[in-house]
Length: 289
Ligand SMILES: Cc1cc2nc3c(=O)[nH]c(=O)nc-3n(C[C@H](O)[C@H](O)[C@H](O)COP(=O)(O)OP(=O)(O)OC[C@H]3O[C@@H](n4cnc5c(N)ncnc54)[C@H](O)[C@@H]3O)c2cc1C
Image 1 (cartoon, helix red, strand yellow):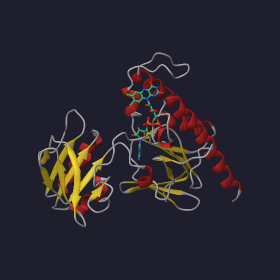
Image 2: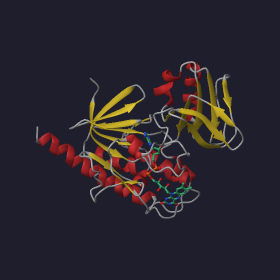
Image 3: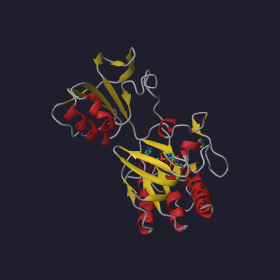
Image 4: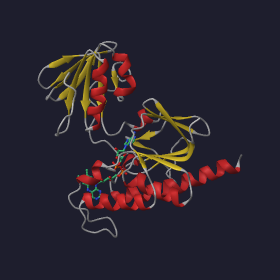
């Protein structure tokens, strides 16, 4: 059986990192999922003037400070995207493609997506629309698949899908080099709408349309309700109390995903509170055994 961690943290922005260092200080066995670049939103800021003690830094400089801090404290990031989290009673199962991690408590620090779902995306979720191409690729053996990629990691997923599918289209939603297999066709049009009957039949673009069996929307994060079935959402954000606890025992949230203001310091502060709450929760679990 795989190791069961005390606390799993999902997200490597300021909220997740602050949670990680505090849980580590409290001697908890932690795992943190995200990416080695920490957070795309950290690197993007031209100048940050409202982070106490770190004045007049660029986003990249601030990111580097965070990276040095966690490295010195021995916090290692697992470079994986969590697709689903299931509450199993006194622990959680975290699904990463075909792998499963287990933790007694979790902290959601996934940030927020500024991009709205496409028309038809939610309606056809699970009926041809998915968020994890590598998980569902075998369903589309010999069929047509459209991948809408919001980041460079999605290229890898497109390449994997193209080895099984009959035809793979890739719609990049960012500028850059796309290191795609030769049999993947790049479409430089804007996706507007997903349509179908019982299942997906096509994607409508600003210029033309593509008949397809499956569509994968590969963004940096998935919506919290998709990530953690049963989690309570209020006004588009995860509902938390002052201890950063959600409606699910052992599940905490911090940062932009809990609501405005969307700021680094607020995110870090919430990450700290969430970590301390998760630590008490795990300690109580042990006492009750
Ligand atoms: C251009 C720009 C400038 C900004 N300037 C400022 C500023 O000057 N001052 C300020 O205070 N704030 C600023 N902000 C806002 C600030 O960036 C956010 O408030 C802050 O980054 C939120 O931190 P977070 O930890 O909640 O989430 P994020 O920083 O968004 O980090 C979330 C992380 O979780 C990862 N993740 C999500 N889902 C999963 C999953 N399922 N599995 C694994 N990993 C996952 C994401 O990839 C990401 O790395 C700015 C934002 C932008 C875009």
